[in-house]
Image 1: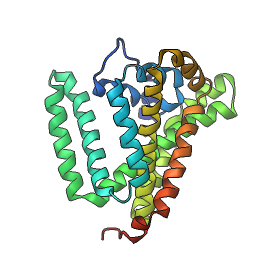
Image 2: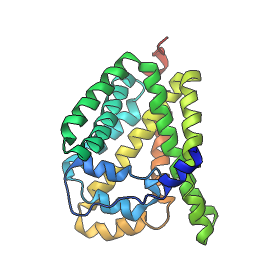
Image 3: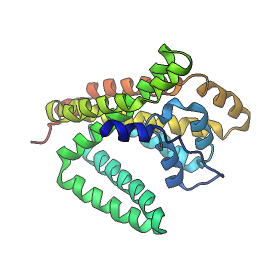
Image 4: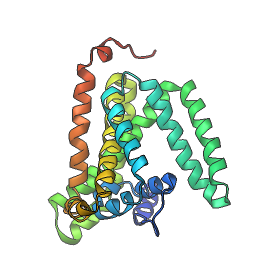
Length: 251
């Protein structure tokens, strides 16, 4: 049954905005409409062009802060990420009944309270989601790198396998290596936000739009590689921070 559901999910194409919009909920929902959205550079570029310059700057600044100081402020980061996920999920569900913002606010508040009360389990969930995100995109990108033609597409469409592996590995890691799990999911989340924000800012320069879109659409491995590098930098920087070494994990 799990396999059937996963196969059904992979058949849903990554959505594209039908018209320009500054609604950040709509933009993010498009970005996460596929688990391997980073491997679809052209669609990603089209979506990021819809993002306002203000939100692009917010993504960039928040991403860099989370990437470099995630473990130092992991409780605040965890609550903010959980609240954001609740808001996005609530917006999607609420849009079905024409009450998007009400349901979004309710779920965001619920997620924030649950996260505050169950911090260690929230870290495990977020770590697992980060692992699923990384696994799905790496699976799709490397499939297109190692294979060709129809076989490459078939392998890439099975990205849910990589997502499942990443979910299990990083989800369990939170209960074994709590500190490493936090540094991983904060670095992944931060670098993703920072890279997407930087691309969105660059796409606001008309003379750069064509070259940037062509570059990130050249191969599915391009954007995952762009995110992998700052992720590793974030982990190393957090590990070297004296405050990180002194901070004790919760019981």
